Length: 125
Image (cartoon, rainbow, N blue to C red; front, top):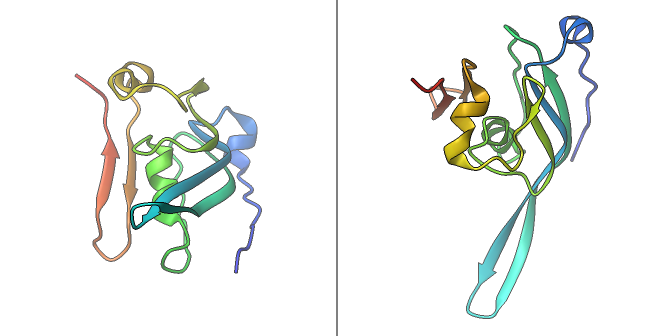
């Protein structure tokens, strides 16, 4: 079951968001044997805004795409559709080696529940 919930944030309405995902999707290709392949849609149509100093919790069932959205938000994954903006700059297709230049002093942290894997994108330098 897929459910879309509206996110309202008064802080973001008054200022530009630090992190914005616009209509993001992630499709993974699968391989079954030598000649068969398929696709799995991990997330589709994700839009969210996070202001400076704000935190966002994504809650859902196992396999619902929470970690995928987190990894896309700090560009550990490049989405198959949509845009990722950090401090107003489109970083959707920015090569890994140039992300440090564009992210500047920003620090974004993604944690999975119950002591799970943590992903961080820290400033370079």
